[in-house]
Length: 115
Length: 114
Image (cartoon, rainbow over all chains, first blue to last red; front, side):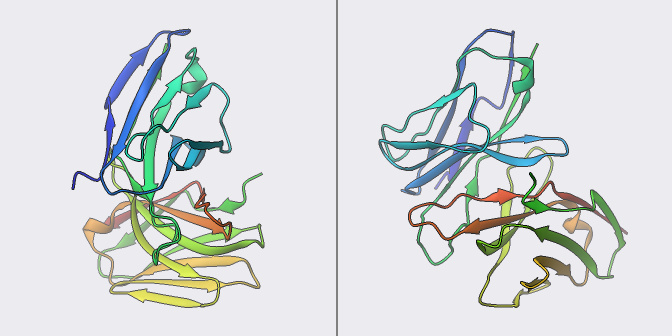
């Protein structure tokens, strides 16, 4: 199993550009989520999904869109990049309700720089 | 409003000694707590967890203690090893059917001195 994969590893954008951060998992997990990590802020939840076709907002959803058309994939779209979106983005997945509740598996992250 | 707080941004401990990382929370609905470990340029990895019905959980060198009345949990690492040098995040979740949302603390950078 590859686990949770994220592409790209690093990206530089100009203000106003759009892009999609890709996330895929091969563990058949129903629950997937996106976090951003900023210095002194920990990891903050952007959006999450409890299954294909179902998404909801987390703590910091503004400026981001998500969709979940398959169990495996959960892309994060930046509609119009802003310098405040410079961050490291992590995708995670878990099988909710399982014996290891809350044990999310994280991808390696995407480092985004918005100029 | 930070619901999960790690008030020590960094901690240095001699190799072989005990490392104690602390975490406080404010939301009384949290009933499950986890610790994650993160190395540079990698995603966080699960370390250990504890349910609110317990006050202690042990896994090898790692023990998590939960004090519900004080809304405080701590992670003990004994003995500390150089490979334990990483950022440690405390996380909490509240029982919500179908929802595994985690609220993370800001992290503590642990450095083990050889």
